[in-house]
Image (cartoon, rainbow, N blue to C red; front, side):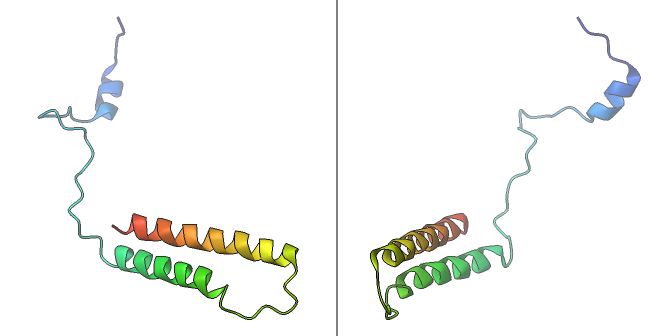
Length: 86
């Protein structure tokens, strides 16, 4: 059993009523955030695909591997941006 002072009770705040979790519900109106996330996601996916459309001067295997890793990173970042905007 633990004894609490009045100071501890004042900092605890009001008790939760109705069995709620205390987390406010999202009303769905977040303004420009979803639009910007979608725009950034589409831009990153387009950059990942456009990276392969550019002509490669002296395409050695090491450069192609770096290009593949960069395009995978850009594509996955774009998909995450689209997923976060939904």
